[in-house]
Image (tube, rainbow, N blue to C red):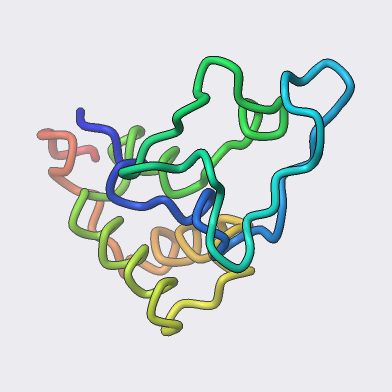
Length: 121
């Protein structure tokens, strides 16, 4: 499965969060500002300091990626949702919490049957 992060970047480009908190044991010396132009280390949809990224970045769990990797949504559904956040048609806070995706699955707006290739979803 390909990396959905390379299609998204919302956690690094300043759309979702204003800054990344840097802790004492992180390699960086000060908090990383994400707004207004995104993380300075986010280059070509990749983290240029990935191996030494701050603890907050290492521990972030994206609900969209979790559902995609768990084969509960397709890549097309994920990309449509990501685009919705980028263009403002999907509420950002609802997206961050994961409630947007959970509500879509729960209300059958996303058809999970056959995404994994079997009848049981």
